[in-house]
Image (cartoon, rainbow, N blue to C red):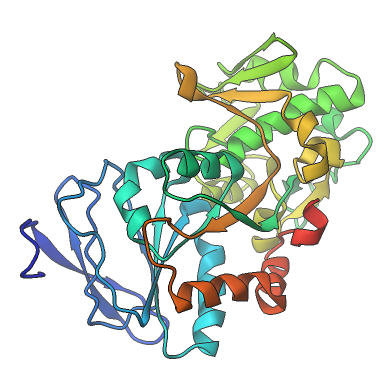
Length: 359
């Protein structure tokens, strides 16, 4: 425990799997989001942050020296950042990298942590707007993009490959189950619902969303002032044809064990997990910045109130430096690494779009 810290939390030792040897990281068991990392120990590891209440500014969250690099990322991007930081650390052995993950849907529950970090990476545009609104960051840079795809287990002969022209008819068939992420847990779930709605518009139909989503869940869709709002306040499904997965690994497991025949996921998730997938037209798959006006005709209602509704944006991942923290040489070098050929090559290998193809 830091003797200069007036707060006296209950400290426990948690072993974290580092890139080389296990290290000891101090954490707390009290019901706050305070995280204390022992800065005297070299750390190159992912440290998940599972608690999300507001961090009280009374206790320092992280203490690091100038040779350390503290990265905060979202839960959905953590595996990607792990690959990036491994490659960066190999080229910069004098830099000790610590990565802490936070749930993107509850990222503002960790404001103090965000302000203390060197770099925040892997958040989507709506999250970037929230961080800007709280004066945590003042600008963002796009590092990569993604797209919504239809995925299935191509090793199963019993699963019919989907056709680009009429894939929805395969999903309509009796006994065919579809899995998407719970939109309250993961942004990808909301993006999947948006893609289903946009499919009706693109194909000139009106039955895709009602058949796959409306009849199978308590998710409702309304229209006002030319904006379609999908209400996911209570994302309950019947389980007859639609399954809401609580996490990305769960969604992949449902597909591979046969509980669901198809999934509406992202290209990066499909490629990283060996799933076969069908790419959708850019008017549907949320991949293009130039088609943002089409995507913006859809909004997601997460909860009541003015802050509970978000306009659908292209699937872009961004990074930024906190405004209240000195931009260190290590943070600048990591950002440059991600944007350069090596970093973009890693992202491409993980199924993401390059920054040039996201426009």
